[in-house]
Picture (cartoon, rainbow, N blue to C red):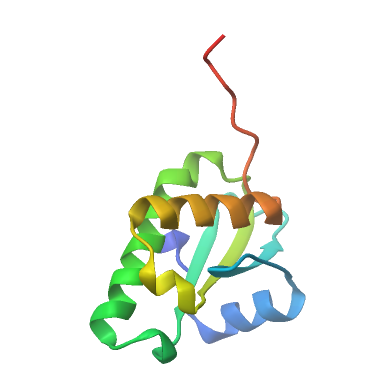
Length: 119
């Protein structure tokens, strides 16, 4: 993710939590706030200390970042998103993380429908 695509400030996180809509599955919670006139998307990550020590938390964040990067061409524009990892996320590998992130973002209405080119 590029710097412009990251939520870093507490003020931005609080705005998404306060005004955004939440969607969840077993591994992740996603808060989404649509921003009119914003030409890019921003994503923030939250991984609690309850999930493990720094090495484990950083691994979870890397997997989430890579999953978001793999899906970024399907994102609708003008969205602020906060992804919160739950306890089961600590046990996932990359493909399971990608599948779970894709599922929760689809439920949140952030991803555009995927076109099948197999015809």
